[in-house]
Image (cartoon, rainbow, N blue to C red; front, side, top):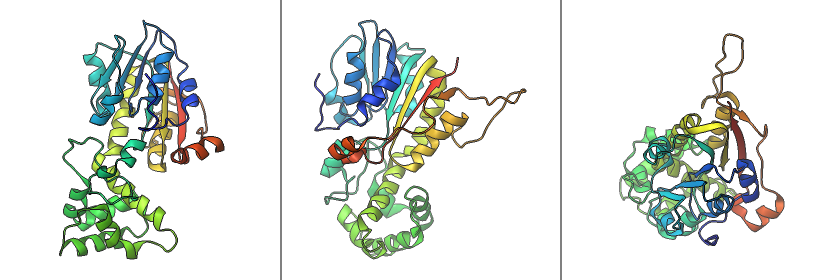
Length: 304
């Protein structure tokens, strides 16, 4: 049960495990199994009475699973956490960990099309069996839809120009690869900021392909129902769109930040923040793993 660091280096491993405050006999869920780095550390702290349930929709992740009576691998998207826990006969859990975004493995496997560093088919599906691919988004979405994606998910100020260039280019030839797309959008990239620009473009398309924000919203809204009082919700995000949803839910009890109060004016929310400000990786970790650079970790405790 060695950590597969070639698949994915777990970010803020110590902070995540500490945040879960693991009870050896408890039930824990890692909804983003990946290379199993965080999961293996959780499992080490469990007794034979404890349980670890992990989720991953990427078929490649199954290779990192192991056999044990108290370990369960669920090959599914974590948007369906409640249903799958019910199928396993689990009513409440003592902690949930979510390490959002794309794994190092998905970035590094060139054929998946997640990275701007290698020419590959426009794919970007976290679930290889998913129906929607980046190629479909780029070649089939109308200009209005493309503008919305690049503005909302990429936070790109020139979203209209980007969408226009894509629509114009695909009229004569399909955009099939990551290099095709970067070539089409070359004139839209700000000088000396090309890398950041293309990273934002790819992020926007990837979020749409995998419905990442919708999945996160569904997941967060189910955590209160499946978490036992005192249980810990530990979520690590990598961009402001994800972090805003997590922060709102933990701080205000609502995905979009609305506050609901009871008759006495007390805020009604299922969780209380453990850390008011996000935990970020130290300089040493960033030096060892540059992908940790943008990580923000938030922890909350289920109210009784």
